[in-house]
Length: 575
Image (cartoon, rainbow, N blue to C red; front, side):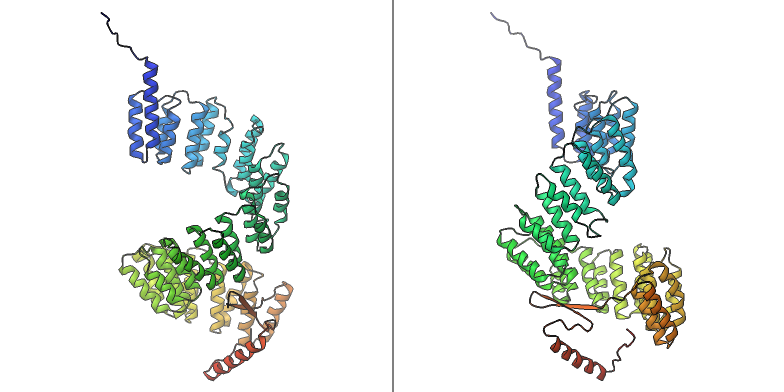
């Protein structure tokens, strides 16, 4: 007779099974309560000091934004290793706590644990921005001292972080890049991206420096191609942007959106529309990001034709017109002057948000439909939507364009009293503009001097325009010094002053202002207007005769001027 003896599972095997079960449960957690339940089980199983478990627990707590609990978990480990320190540093960075991340880094050094090649890249992720430039330099010196240059991951992180700190950072990144013995595609992309991003290169139109790096790249991917096309588009050089776009071996939806938006922003309707057609013919259908970007570009440049084409694509493909897309359509139609269509889209939005109301309010305001805008604002409040500061910019703008001074006062002073919104500089600017246009110059000056922030050049210029409108020469003199100090080379200010003195018959002062303009090298740019017709934008400037139908155009203008004079219009001869 055989007697069966039960086999006892070794303790380390049981512990391993428990460990694996707890870790698998951590991966399935989707909220903080679930993570806390697993944490309790880990404590019960006495695994809270296990250097394999605790990093995963801290990472899970970090994703649920439970950083207080994550720090407590860390503190329960008597001898944390570099991996555990890195996990906590990364958690702090992911939760926008850079100061706590650096405190953990310094604590790690005090405890005698040496950083590894992951420590510094984690720290660098919390250092983007010009204000952090000295901190990046400090980290750089640590890397040099410890000797982590041999791992390309570390210098690549440095280049990327430096290049996000403006021109000074790009210079430091370039110096580091040139000193690198080994470079990979990430190195090149980070360097090119930095060159394109800087306020320095693109603003000055110096894309040549970035292009030199691009040409030297041993291997180019979609990131490097896209970065260059984006840079040239932002710099306004659509010839180079298109040349690179055409040469791209692979084009994704992002790059199509960039090039189409670039053409649209420049007002190049025919090119933008043709590319949009090509994109659809290639089988690519615009997503939410593409639709919103292209519609935004159409709105800013007035390309109604392309905007309508995008709208038609949305309807044809049964694209889910979420609120974000609907808002972009409303904005485009409103800015292009198609208020009826904008209203039709607005009324069809199933789930309106405050942006939906703000966009249509602004559209009504800038096109002079002040009373309709205020009626819509009342409807917005009635339907339970809480206005924000942008809403009140639209409301005050509506009052300004419609000359509704009393209503403007009411809404301005109700902002904080009824809605808890403290007026910002833009609200003061709208109100001062409203009072100035309405002839209440003394009240406008009083409000300007009561502002809690320093008035900017726009507000001073607004008041100067009101002085010209109401021939207030003495008040204009008070503004002159402020404007010349804030914007010494703005031709608009010089022109307004010159016109004010001309209206008052003070031709000696007019001559002085014109002489000052000449000495400062200031020239008033010619006014221009544009109109889109058959996928082409026609631009007109003063005395321009370059258009093939300029004779017909000037004949029509002549007839319009005659009609205007018959109803009492007097042209301004001082401009």
